[in-house]
Length: 165
Image (tube, rainbow, N blue to C red; front, side, top):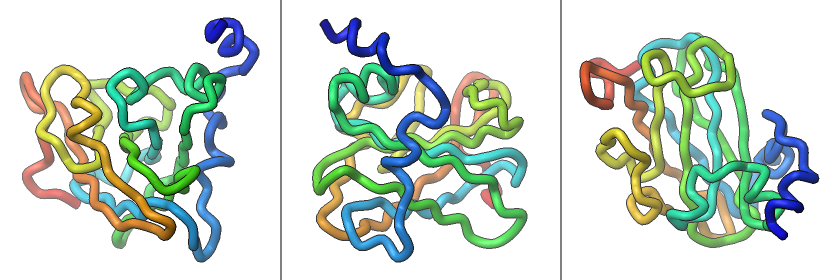
């Protein structure tokens, strides 16, 4: 039954953006994300909010939305200078997992050799996605500030840049 519901929702880069867009000033559950460690200021950032379970973390957005599970996304150009802070709304107070993509060529795809990735709680990255428990963060009824450090491919591993921007 779930596959039938998922097929009825068209997947698009805009899916989840309305749910994730913060109001100014945001007063409800949201994450204020300070972004550090960018390799450069090229491209765009894409921040996504997922349920904090291994089965749902980084799952297909279509499937999550069709199942009524939390999913939100925001995309933003990278300012050429200054601190970078993103805001993403959560549907309600609770526990979530966040991923952040530095899409350096703005193609809306993760390319291991080009792009950067980061997660809430800044886990050390290997070659598979981190466990949801390691990236899960809580939010109450008001915005919660967190920091995400970007990681890029270096040889056979993923790690932060030595001189973060």
